[in-house]
Amino acid sequence: MSDLVNLSIAEAGAKVRAKETSFPELVRACLERERQTHALNGWIEIYQDQAIKLSEAQQTLLENGYDLGPLQGIPLGIKANIDIAGQEMNAGSEILRGNMAAQDAAVTRALKQAGAIILGTTNMHEFAWGGTTNNPHYGACHNPWDTARVPAGSSGGSGVVAAVRSAFATLGTDTGGSVRLPAALNGVTGLRPTVGNISTEGVFPLAWSMDTVGPLAARSADCALLYGTLSGMDAAQQSAMSRQMVKPLQGLRIGVLDPYSFYSLQPGVEQAFRAALNDFEAQGVDIVSLRVDGLEHAVDAQIIVDACEPSAIHWPWLKDRPEKYGDDVRILLQAGLTFTAVEYLQAQRYRTWLREKFAALFEEVDMIITPTLPFTAPLIGQETIPIGDGEVSTLLGNLIFTCLPSLAVLPAISFPAGFDSQNLPVGLQLMAAPGQERLLLRAAHQYQLCSDYHLRQPPLFRL
Image (tube, rainbow, N blue to C red; front, top):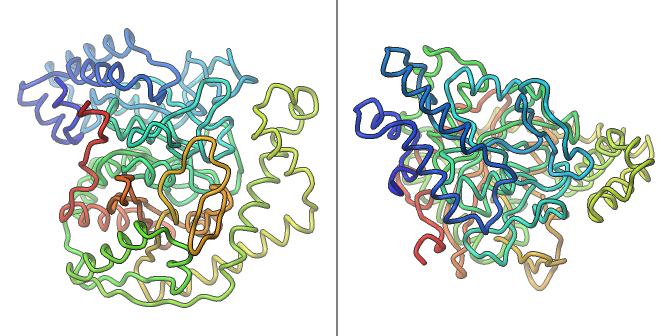
């Protein structure tokens, strides 16, 4: 049964249709893997009995000729800030504990219509405002490659669940990097779509102008299946995307922001980054050096927007019930109240400049590559992270790469590209012009055909 969770979504579906296994067996395999990895605290809630019953119903439908497509009967995890009708939507908070969702979020509804089995809700940084998933209300989430380290956030639980395969894929939300960061630090693939390409209806917001919903899974091909369903593709469009995924990359142009992409990288990250550039070149990709002045202001703009918009959302609770927040989130929300309207508008002006700058860059190249983070997973509770020549930084203060697509409203994908000397995963990020998710998924898939980093298992499995 343990071998089942290591299959791709397509492989698992094929085995069910060949009568070599069943949807209930897939669910039970994921539940068994969750029991084995329960101490990582990747889940907030598991719907065990309901999931088994639903999988039995989907099995009956399939056996009677009702094939709903590739996600039918596949167990998935959903971040705890996404509405699931009749279930608690707490967004990892104490304030929303006991809040029962009256209806499904748009993404939940799309997955249910595709026959997917929602196994439960995944742990997250409270209200998605943070990068560690060290949650004071539901417990810290632990990185499966080293349980003393963070899995990043805010979709940390979704990253952990995808890494240990206690679901075949998960949904996260991404504002400044909350899908891509957990993908990188847990050794899986995570897609941030173009804003608006996947509905955020029924998702508790963090920052309206940058919020997205995206999939995490071991493989880019699995992320593509979820993206196709969540973005509303019909069967013909999904089939066309599948054909695109297998096309070689020869002749494509990938840009490198030089020297920005190499700023203050830990040695293991830089080594993996340079090796990946060579790997893409070996596939016939042209690597193009790009110089852009002004990117050093991107993190400041990200922090301002990502502070002001959440504080506006939380102002009534922050005023009346500040003690209900975890200390770190309360401090961030209160800090958001200190920025002026002038600072917020200047940050938005910078975003307009950045969008125009990247639009020009995508006339020269098809994609742009960076590391996802300059470092691998820090320790839980670690205040600062050594980078470069003795420099230190915080996790939220060093989103120098993930903030670029967020600010410029670009799609981006993080994919595994190696390990450092401590056997911690390294993730790289590809970004492209708005609406080019298929190109990003194809590039990551082609890289994964030539590497096995995305298939490696955390050492916890071998204890």
